[in-house]
Each structure stands twice: as structure tokens, then as C-alpha cells.
Length: 123
Image 1: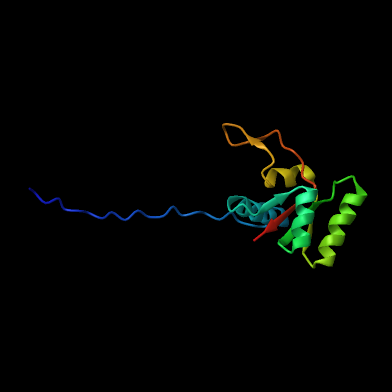
Image 2: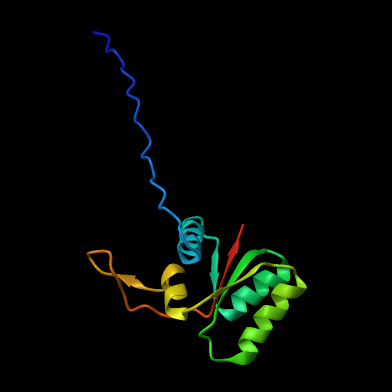
């Protein structure tokens, strides 16, 4: 029987290029993108309130365009009580898109974007 020489081939890991962050919205987009990959992004009032109360939330994003004052007051109060950083985002549609609440078409453009009034990132 003939011996077969085994050849090891090293495959280089794909290099991920980081986007240039020049403003707050770009930084928020990057944080939420990385949180979605590792399943650390929580959306919705009930889930966010549970995460803040349990001490799992690292940062909370709240949309300024939310038209329910009691909603804002609850999230702000919980974040203040548990000393969780709270970041205001201008538009809830943008926050929803960054948190993955949209469909992507074949070109990668977001379609059917749903708004999110609050989103938090956990560890």
C-alpha cells in the first residue's frame, strides 16, 4: 500500500474591517450590530425593564420620538435606580433598524422597518 502524504493548509481568518466612527449614531449602530451577533440585544419595554431590574443591562437606548411619557419615565427611572447608562436616540425607526427590527431586500437595503422605543445591550 502506498502512503499518502498529508499536507496541512493554513487558512487565514477573514479580516473584519471596522467602520470609521465619527459620531454618536455611528457608535450606537456598531454597538447594536455587535450585540445582535452575540445575542445580547434586548428590544421592547417589558424585556428591557426585566433586564434592567435584574442588573443584566449594560447600556439602554431610548428613542426621543416616543410619544408615551409614562414609557419614558419608567425606563429613565429604572436606569437611574440601577445606575445603567441611558443614551437618547433621535428617531425610533433608526433605533429599530439598528436593533434588527427590519427586513432586508436582496440588495441589503432595509425594508419594512419597525420602530423601537427602547433597546438595551446585555453581556
